Image (cartoon, rainbow, N blue to C red; front, side):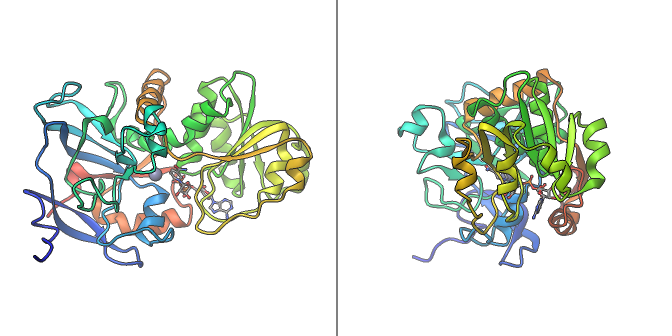
Length: 360
Ligand SMILES: NC(=O)c1ccc[n+]([C@@H]2O[C@H](COP(=O)([O-])OP(=O)(O)OC[C@H]3O[C@@H](n4cnc5c(N)ncnc54)[C@H](O)[C@@H]3O)[C@@H](O)[C@H]2O)c1
Ligand SMILES: [Zn+2]
């Protein structure tokens, strides 16, 4: 039997924008989503952030993309239907979905609320769901997901500026907590002042940490200090400034999306300091060993976060009035937005107004 088309494999009609090949260019796409199952929550998508991962995936830079590919994993909206066994959500609730829509629920990682590290975790798009069909992300009109993967958006957060917390937010919050870089008085560096980096500054400041932004763009200095609340700003090419900061940081969150040298960053760490990589360049970074040995330093990584921690992060954001700084765009601007994102020309996250601008 021939496989059913994207439009017919499920009963609910859906519409979004998809990349068709490695050009990454997005265009309108009709597909379908499953009928709301007994543990599912269905919602109308209102806003969706554009993460740099969407760009890497649309262009298949990590070699795992399946086309047609509907990106989007910073998805927020309002619940339209819940399954008969859903008890945490009701119609009208404001909710979101981040990077994950499934996991095995029985491995060590899942048992420890780390669904993000489950070997069978299912990404929100371009992955195979339990029923064998391909998942599609939030650049689309409707969404359906198991209630376990649904996050409640606190009432006081604006939906558009809260959307990026579902990926950018949890991606930086989780390592600050796990690597013990969340203690008041500590000194943390944030490398790359983009979508992830700017919310890293906000979370770290709310935790009482002293923050230094390390960036290639001197033009971002004033805003980082005055507006985002960073304590200091280092231009990575400024050798004198970098030299003066050697050995001063307890940890560094590196959000850079392209390959870059990490030895200067390791140099900034105190003895036993930690460099945590969250940016995901397509090519490997060079790992210099001696700078690590000299000072017992640690290089680690972190990917997203589990669902319990994601809810904790967004509740923390609500208590501390943390949202992303966004540029809201219409759906048909998405390809231009992707080009600008590649050039670092956004302060600091594009969010698509799906509810008002996605038209068949
Ligand atoms: N670990 C995870 O779970 C996770 C989650 C989300 C995103 N990511 C990855 O994190 C990276 C950043 O994502 P984002 O959405 O914040 O992207 P972004 O484009 O908004 O920010 C990236 C920042 O890196 C800077 N940059 C780019 N190339 C650089 C270079 N060669 N040297 C120094 N700085 C450079 C840019 O100017 C920008 O400020 C991407 O690779 C993305 O795929 C990882
Ligand atoms: Zn992301």
